[in-house]
Image (cartoon, rainbow, N blue to C red; front, side, top):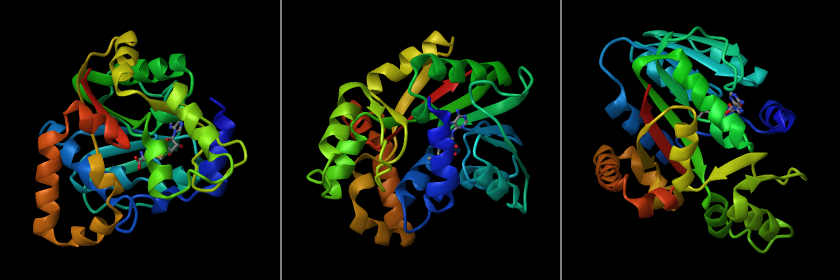
Length: 268
Ligand SMILES: C[S@@+](CC[C@H](N)C(=O)[O-])C[C@H]1O[C@@H](n2cnc3c(N)ncnc32)[C@H](O)[C@@H]1O
C-alpha cells in the first residue's frame, strides 16, 4: 500500500472519531456489534483490535468487561483511543501495523481486523494480515475481519448523486474492474487508497494464510442506503425489528454483495 496516503488521510484530512455516530453510519455500528455479540465466546476476553481507529469498538468491548488492546498506524487514532477510560474492562492503545504485529504467538482470544484489509491494495499484504491474526490468536480463538464490497462506491456515488461529477466515473470504473480504489486528487467524500473485495475472493486470501473462514456476512444490506430510516433507530422496537430482519438474511449471497461492508468470521 502507499501507507503514507492512508496515514495522512486519517491523521490530517478525515476525522474517524465521528464516523460511527448516531448521525453517521449508525447501522454499520449496530449491525457489527450485533454480529460480534453473537460470535464472542463467553467470559472476560483478551481482544486485539487491529486497525481499531479512534476506538469505537474497543470502547464498546471494554465496557463489557474485556481487556482490549487497540493497534493502529495513525497517531491521532492512538491518541484518541488512549483517552478513553472505560468504566469496565480495560483499554490500551498503541501504534502498529497489521502486517507485522508486535505481539507474542497465541497471546489473545479475539482479533478484530475492522480496517486493515481494505486499506491494503496488495494481496500479499492482506494474506500477511490474516497470517498475523492467526499467529497471535490462541487456538480456537475468534478472528473477525471487515472488507468493503467491490460495489460500494458505485452505490454510494449513485445514492449521493455524484456519478456525473468530473472524474467520478473513472474512479468507480477502476473500483469495479479490479477493486483498486485511488483518490489521487483527494476529492472529499471519496475515501483514500483502498481495496474493495469481491465477496468470492475473501475466503481465498484467508485460506492462503492457513485460516479457514466459518462464514461471511453482509453488514448493512439496503439499510446502509436508507438515510431517512436512520432517524427511526432511536425507537427501540423499530431498531430491534430491523436488526432481526437483517440477521435473518445476513448470509444470503445477494445481501452480502449489496452491503457496503462484509464481515469474515473465522476460528484460529
Ligand atoms: C475506517 S477505519 C476503521 C476503524 C474501526 N476499526 C472501525 O471499524 O470503525 C480503518 C482503520 O484501519 C487502519 N489501518 C489502515 N491500514 C492499516 C494497517 N496496515 N495496519 C493496521 N491498521 C491499519 C486505519 O488507520 C484506520 O484506523
